[in-house]
Amino acid sequence: MPESIVFTIRPLTEARVPALLGRAAHAAVLRLIADADPSLAAQIHDDDGPKPLTVSHVLGLDARNHAALVRPDGRYHLRVTLLTPALETLATAWRPATLPLLDLDGVMWCVEQMTADPGGHPWAGSATYETLAHAVLTRSVAPTRWTFEFVAPVTFRQRGLTQPLPTPALIFGSLLDKWNAFAPLAFPEEVRRFATECLAVSRFDLRSRAEPTKGGVPQIGAVGRITCTAVNRDRYWCACIDALARFAFYSGIGAGTTRGYGQARLLDADQEG
Image (cartoon, rainbow, N blue to C red; front, side):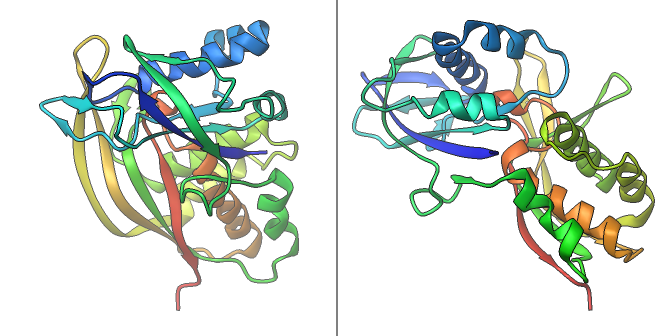
């Protein structure tokens, strides 16, 4: 672990569905977990801290006016990432032929394929925390510039308010919280201070996106790309930042990652010339 599984899913009937099915997808994935381990599913649901999984919206919808028409001959995907050994072990028993139908907001979907192989889908993959952290211990020179892509709105909760604008402090603070919650080797809290004081935004191409929530209040987030550059090139701290940046592919960034928000990946990491 961590692991990113991409499901190929198909609706049993033609139907008009909400454009954003992240909340329904999260509920469906929790039901899959509960089928194998009810106590683990309850713990994930009830825990107020960082969640050990992320769930995307249904990918491939042609949404218009907050809704989409889905057909049985269409091709759709659902991405689930798992951050703990317990979830990864549970998922080894998942097989498309034996998984139950997924109820997504009243429409039934079947799972036709699933893969954790990046050769099968660019958003699939797997790693180990040890591999991600290896550079911290072994690299003589670490990257000093990182470019992220946010393909689903990224937003943060800060002092009880929603903060839709990603900053280095918020991005890496979110990643540090999840890493230290689930990785066997924790990074020091000083990483947060380094991100706040020693990382700057050097380039961005962001736009805001408003998405309706369950209560009807729009949730504002940012999509696009952002580059963070270290103004202090200390090897150790930059290596910690680099490990967290690569972890983002699995952990997501910010709030709401179990219901479609914060899907992100590192596009590039290099040394500023």
